[in-house]
Image 1 (cartoon, rainbow, N blue to C red):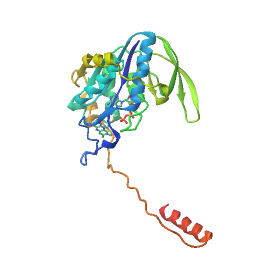
Image 2: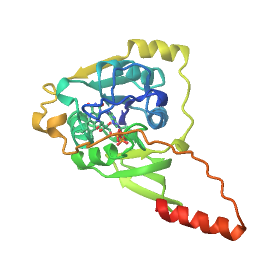
Image 3: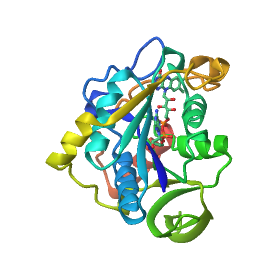
Length: 258
Ligand SMILES: Cc1cc2nc3c(=O)[nH]c(=O)nc-3n(C[C@H](O)[C@H](O)[C@H](O)COP(=O)(O)OP(=O)(O)OC[C@H]3O[C@@H](n4cnc5c(N)ncnc54)[C@H](O)[C@@H]3O)c2cc1C
């Protein structure tokens, strides 16, 4: 079984800095970690490989520093890494990101693509479904258990707004996973060595035959008008009077702040 796991490098949560001019997150590779949801996707892919055989490729679009994240994934059982890295990809919104990822995936002969449920910085949960659409394959989001998988189909348990449902789809397909699906393993010492020597290939937009009008800022219809850190007002007001007076005052306050 040929499996690709899409993984994204995200700032560790206290380190998010925004570019005041472009309104995008400043990503210089410092204090970055693997998107937490993606660690569950890596683990699930490795478990499937251990059961059915095959190969796990971790795939990322990002800056050159993302190579260390791919090596870390290889120390946890992935076989090789692919990094799509090019100035032409900079400023990509989800549409342009999923387009670039699809260019590598379409010729890779994949049976299964796994993604995290969402990235903890961008938070859109759009990449998985968009990537599946670019490739013309089915997708199932929010998978919390793989009930059965063979070379032709996968049956999963997925989280819904009212509980769970079981869904079966033919392969190739794309799944996005939630954190209840497994407990990711730690890297072993031989694993760390394997990660250090793993084959990590870097692809540019040219290598992928990308249409530059669909890449990076040029291929991104999303416009960020403004970004800001929400302020927290913690003004305390003391209200005197009878319980009725207090209730009236609170009601007035609620109406004022709508
Ligand atoms: C106008 C605009 C400009 C932007 N400019 C930049 C920029 O210059 N540089 C930049 O890094 N970001 C930029 N972004 C953010 C970027 O578009 C998103 O981070 C990216 O598309 C993924 O979306 P998300 O974070 O919401 O991921 P989600 O859709 O929430 O992620 C879901 C899953 O998709 C997979 N995934 C997500 N992103 C990647 C990836 N890059 N590689 C592999 N797998 C992935 C992971 O499995 C992840 O768990 C920009 C966004 C906008 C709107």
